Length: 282
Ligand SMILES: NC(=O)c1ccc[n+]([C@@H]2O[C@H](COP(=O)([O-])OP(=O)(O)OC[C@H]3O[C@@H](n4cnc5c(N)ncnc54)[C@H](O)[C@@H]3O)[C@@H](O)[C@H]2O)c1
Image (cartoon, rainbow, N blue to C red; front, side):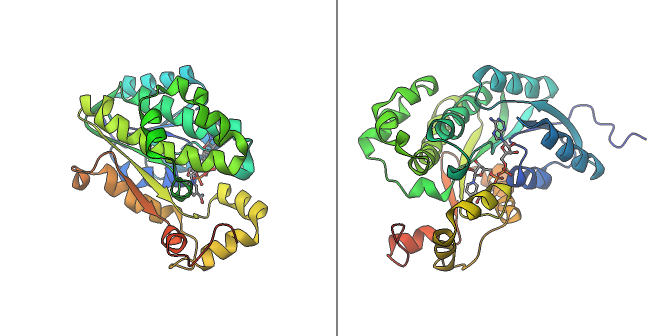
C-alpha cells in the first residue's frame, strides 16, 4: 500500500526527538517528510515507529548535537531529501542532568552548530525554532557582554571570559546563560545567514513542561521547583502540546513577520519573579 505518492515533499528536520519536539512536528508534518535526529538510537526507533503508525513519512539519523560534523551531516541529509522548510532544535540537557561544561557544549555551542548548519540549507520561506527556556530570563547578561556574544563565532563561544568565569561556576548558571545565548543566536541568524536565505528563525522559552527531562528536575530540585510553579499565575506545569501549538504558529505562514524573537511560555513564572511574588533565592 502506498500512502502518499508525492515524491517531492518539503522536509521537516527535528534535532532532539524528545517530548516537545515530536509534539511540534506532529502539528505540521502531514504531507511532508520528517527527518528525526537524536543521539539515542532507541529513542529514534520508538519515535519513528509512532510517527509511521500515525501515517507520517519519517527517516531517522543518529546525530550528536555536540559534534559540529555530525550536525552538518544532519543538515546535508535534510537537504538531500528535499526543500528544507522547517528546522526545530530541542536537543538539550537540564541542570540536574549534567556538568556545566556539558550543558554549555550542548545547549549553547551545539545549538550554534545547528543554527549555522541549517543557515546553509534552509529553503526560501522556511522557518526555524529553537527551544530555549524561561531560565534565559533569570540571569541578565550585561549589554556589552551580549554584544560580544553576538559577534563571536560558535566555535569560540567557550573561550569567552564570561563563559569561562561565570557560566562554568555551576550547572544552574551554565543552563541559564546557555538559554539566553539561544535568544541571541536566533537574533543573529535572523539578521544574517537565515535572512540571506529568506528564512525566519525564532525561539520559544518554555516554563516547567512535564517531560522526561522535567521529571529529572523535579526529582533533584524538589520543593523549590514546586513553589515556583505554585506562585506562578497558572499555578500548574505546562504540557508539550501547549508548546507545540505556539511552535506551529511561529513556524507557520501566519507568523511571516516574526523573526529573531523569543516567545516566553511559562505560565507567568517570570512575571512572578519580576514583581517579587516569587523569589528565586527563597
Ligand atoms: N521540560 C521542561 O520543563 C523544559 C523547560 C524549558 C526548556 N526545556 C528545553 O526544551 C528542550 C527539549 O526538552 P524536552 O523536555 O522535550 O526533553 P526531552 O528529554 O524529551 O528531549 C531532549 C532530546 O534531546 C536528545 N539529546 C540529548 N543530547 C543529545 C545530543 N548530544 N545530540 C542529539 N540529541 C540529544 C535526547 O535524546 C532527547 O530525545 C531542551 O533543550 C530543554 O532544555 C525543557
